[in-house]
Length: 422
Image (cartoon, rainbow, N blue to C red; front, side):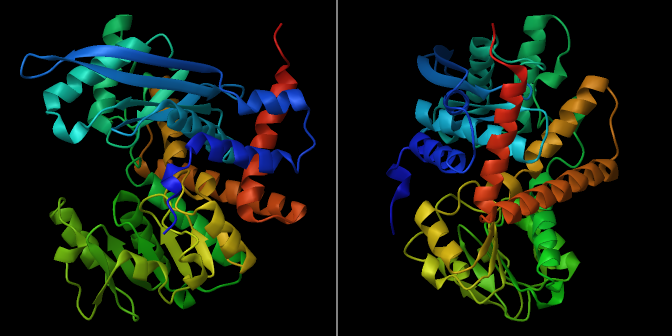
């Protein structure tokens, strides 16, 4: 397998922009602006550990672009966090917000650490000190963080509380992805999976495909994959293959998704290998990706579809439920074969859409029922799919290129309209 993880993420992000702008008639100065970050902050800060020692952590917060609105993007805790990765992720957030046309720019943050080796108290201390260090950059009208890798609603609660203590008043709208008790939005947990299912349904409509004739495979049975599988099952699609880190299950007649999900909800730390669905055969993650299905949803890790397995993929539709599951080489191979790929910046955008809805609810101090949130999410995803589809058709480019071109065009147009200060 090719090892694209060694490739610099920022180089990948910049090449994607170059490819998109090569098809757009943009001023060179505008191109230079949208390829550069607006603000970069790196902080080195001390944290007192449980054993009394002091450890120095390095964190980053990057604002790529704020032309269309406040910066928006998650905070990740991981040993591999570095500046170039955070810059690339911030840029991708700009395009994701632009492609679904919500009034945010892109940002990202992270701390280089191993959260699995830290106690809850150490994580809280690190989070609060990190937020203190970046507090001059974040705010409900400047930059709104959210959860990402190894962060969750609890971490967001600590962040919101820290900012509130610094401000001397409650500022719950400074972050999204919070617990509902602290101003989080109903529907946030299922938002990304719901968005994936919506995009899949819209593609089937445009191809005049019936759900009952569309066999589905879902790689990655976490929060995104399990929700997408349930909703596709409810639409009438036979979900014939699912997998997680423990491997997966395959039944050509379709799996009983409600029963599987009920088991996983009752045993939240369990893996799929413990489920043992009736009349299902064990498969590996690699086997799932090349299984005999019409619709494939890679909702696990990045780079799962690569040059070594793209030629064996039998699905004619791929809806990316993870960030970056398809390498550039695989994308070219699959596109040449006529496979329709709904790109991550569109299909994976349900989470940031409901983060936007959470921010709106927090600002007005008026909260909607879950059905209302889901309806608004659905409307935005359907509209965005239509816009990307129409743009791609008019420019005669694949959906991924169409999505990037549309996003870059929107940011560039906003920048041209606002002008350059002074």
